[in-house]
Image (cartoon, rainbow, N blue to C red; front, side, top):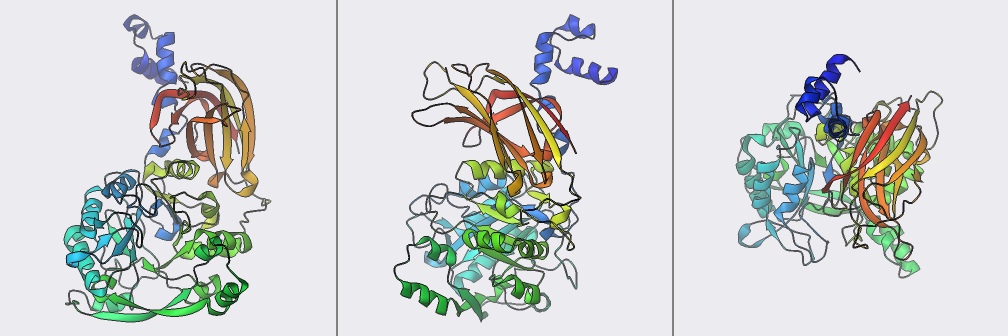
Amino acid sequence: MNNNIASEIIQKYEPIEEVREARQMSIEGFTRYLCSSDCQLFNNEYEKVYQDMTHPLNDYFISSSHNTYLISDQLVGPSDIWGYVSALMKGCRCLEIDCWDGSQNEPVVYHGYTLTSKLLFKTVIQAVHKYAFITSDYPVVLSLENHCSPLQQEVMADNLQFILGDALLSDMLDDFPDKLPSPEALKFKILVRNKKIGTLAETRERKNSDKHGQVQEYEEYEETDQDEEEEKVKESETLVILKDNSGKKTMKVKVALALSDLVIYTKAEKFRSFHYSRLYQQFNESNSIGESQARKLSKLAAHEFILHTMKFITRIYPKATRTDSSNFNPQEFWNVGCQMVALNFQTPGLPMDLQNGKFLDNGSSGYILKPQFLRDIETKFNLNEVLENNNPVTLMIRLISGIQLPPSSLSSSNKADTLVIIQIFGVPNDEVKQQTRVIKKNAFSPRWNETFTFIIQVPELALIRFVVENQSRITGNEFLGQYTLPVLCMSKGYRHVPLFSKGGQSLEPAALFIYVWYVR
């Protein structure tokens, strides 16, 4: 460390004037420095947008939520505008809006055929308009799960245009596009994702014409929802045979032209197969695939899946049987390049820890440029094999101590038996878990001084998670706090690890003190 940097640190953190003037540092000043943001584990260079934001949208992981309007479960819980506000404030860039016909010709948002409460569609759009770009300048996609009649679809189109104004993207940026625009080109824009009639050129020809009362019908390929079917106990073999025989059918869908023409770069299209997409899918068409089908595809045809996500935005959503709003592990779908891995933001736990940790990167902008091997059409990347020319990271972490760890709810005197688990999430070969020994009856200042080594083959996709637990042999270990971040966003040297509650709230001043070193 050169003298100038040392002097700056002393000036910034040394509280005792005489010591500061002598260009020295007391224990108090040094402690302040070690516990400051300058010594946090997350490298502050990545707290701003630093990646190239001029690639097409499909080259990015995009922070995405599922059933954004719910703040608890999927059956009887309340629909709340706070679901949208809090998701946007967390940097979410793709929101789901479940739209149904409401009374007095006002479309409503709720989880259809359930007892969840209802919001007015226009109220949701007003909230989106107000909060869309507070956390991030980059585009927001409104993914409409549209069950409305053509008449109320027109009301939706009017609401979108009147409330969002110039923020609504309603025309192509280029005359003859053959690829999606970039997040940079779409800054401060809101995009509508919905079914669409006709081509972009036809949409432009109709610009500024009166479309009220114009409804078009088209046939949509419909496949039995395997995500729902697989989760039910099969009642008889007849059901399976029927499903096999009638799995592919078409249904007629009515779309109001006024709403259809607001869909530009994010046309929702049913996924049929990778082969079909390769032959017929247009650059502005995106697919939604349920988690069960996506999991099957990622296991049986991972390379094809990766080639698909290089060209087309792919959204993964939780299966219908997750009525408690639980989440799947998003990592397995990021591994194959899926851009929009949609989670229930209202449900805390491991999946949301991974979501929040991953999207700390690139200034918490909600957009992260995918690694080169998930963008390059010549890729040799294989999820389950180590490539000869890959560049693994050898990571060493010395877990030194804990600082005022969160109190245990099982102990009135905060005499928790503390341990720390370090987990790596990434491609299957990189997933590993190691843990410290238990320090008995000390959550205030436990000392471990243990060293852990990890060899990470695909660091570009890897996340690291620190979990502090209170050992309990009777009830199972009690969660006390956690912190998750991308492996490549860690700073080297002596660092403090902030801790967060299960719900994502800061537990400051609770922290871990560690030493980090890694080489490639």
